[in-house]
Amino acid sequence: YQGYTILSQVSIALDASAITLEVSNSKSLTATLTDYGENGTMVFWSSSNTKVASLSAKTGKTVKVSGLKAGTATITAKDATGVVAASCKVTVKNLPAPTVKVASAGYNKVKITWSGVKGTKGYRVYRCSKSGKIQKYWSLTSSARSLTNTGLVTGSTYYYKVRAYKTVGKTNYWGDYSKLKYAKPIPAAVSGV
Image 1 (cartoon, rainbow, N blue to C red):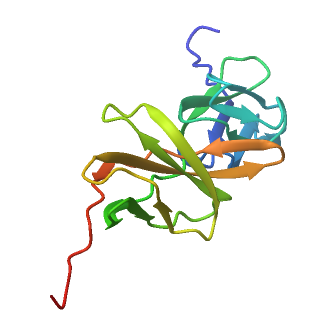
Image 2 (spheres, rainbow, N blue to C red):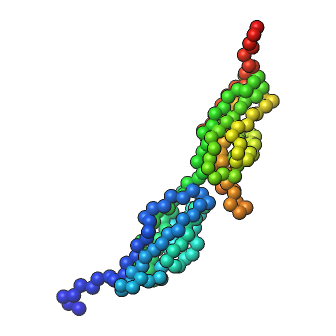
Image 3 (tube, rainbow, N blue to C red):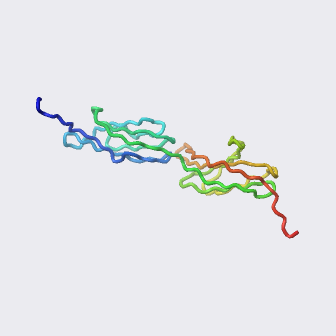
């Protein structure tokens, strides 16, 4: 074949080069395989990290990519020879952390309030040590935006953090922890004296 140039007549392309997913969510990814001018269907899929992103199928033109835990993975689509390939970077993120405020609510209690996180099943409020070690927690519904912790010691410092979660099937997917916030229960100011 002297004097001739042989060009590859197989190409593969994906409809996205990068995807960002929240944990437990999924998106479709479609490959277009051109094989000798005909639109082929023999596409083989793989994930570089199946603990982060899983695939609904190993072959076919379209697959569903599901986010399992926070991290990154590369989804690769190849033709039957394995020579021609295209890839998509998948970033999976946890539910975002709520914004938390903590304040004295009396001589022996502290009130914790937080912002809502879309799509949650509920929230968990943690009382912690200064270093963040969990000492006690409360589980609340998705509509909850505050909790008052009673029976505390006046003048002692108490630390709290909150995170959201959602449930898919029987699995709970936890969001990121909020920043650790603290307050001291103090007696209310006396008025009218």
